[in-house]
Length: 112
Ligand code: HEC
Image 1 (cartoon, protein in one colour):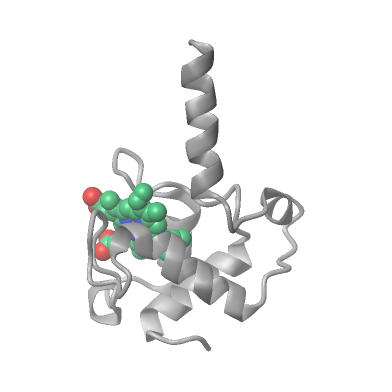
Image 2 (cartoon, helix red, strand yellow):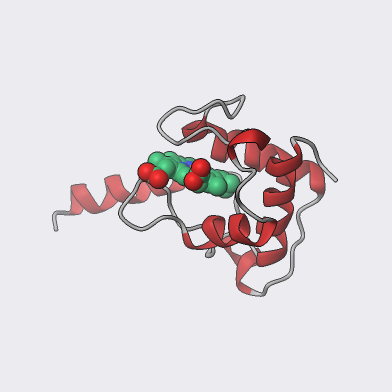
């Protein structure tokens, strides 16, 4: 791999993950407040799923679209991603509790 290619990959990762600190997920302790999580869902997930979750590159994530999934199912999708699609796994950067919070947020359309 050329040095240019490597550094470009590094730059795009850095851009994608600006609001996220991987160290927080590694120790399993969430230091994010609900406000920070809400902002992350709106910005990081919204960049693919639409800022109002009505869909974009990713499918719509409004409560009516997610009715068939349990909170646990959704948390699992968030942590593992959907292999073979553009939906990335988030387990390296969010904890299970944070994924569960996000799942509940999306299912109810508002923070708990
Ligand atoms: C890089 C783009 C991208 C980002 C960022 C992204 N997603 Fe996705 N997501 C997708 C795509 C594309 C799909 C649809 C995959 C398919 O089934 O073809 C998807 C599917 C999903 C699904 C399944 C929806 C359904 O109806 O089956 C959920 C839930 C989901 N994403 C949640 C999230 C959450 C929460 C975040 C933020 C933590 C997020 N996504 C960030 C691209 C993205």
